[in-house]
Length: 164
Image 1 (cartoon, rainbow, N blue to C red):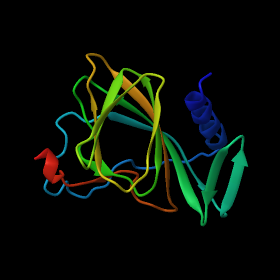
Image 2 (cartoon, rainbow, N blue to C red):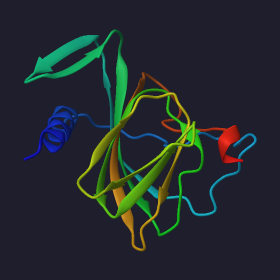
Image 3 (tube, rainbow, N blue to C red):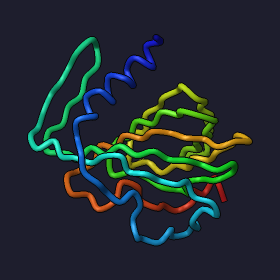
């Protein structure tokens, strides 16, 4: 197993016991941008609160929070060509592409394509866009780390100047 996959498995194993539900998107408008024509189907698998600040470290993997946080896990299913629209998150996210291919564009219009089996981290709260650039369905599992009680896991954002 590659180090990248081993890290993703470790993070998911820590989060699996948490349970709850949550809304993925905010009711806020998209500002200067517009909502995507075809959004992914979102299924929130769990949401729970880590009630106390914590530090955890094992085998070079570190997790730390100075205050209580919510952790949510969701499955996103993208039809060919569908996108998240420009958005940001109130905290870091860990994304694993399980099938297909996802191209992520940063606020500076840098692009990176991730394929099945790859995991990446979004630091938050930086805006970005994710698009299924494959000819088939793309699925991903996203783990959100957000301030306790956050209404939204994803916040619509303006289109950056470089993408207009």
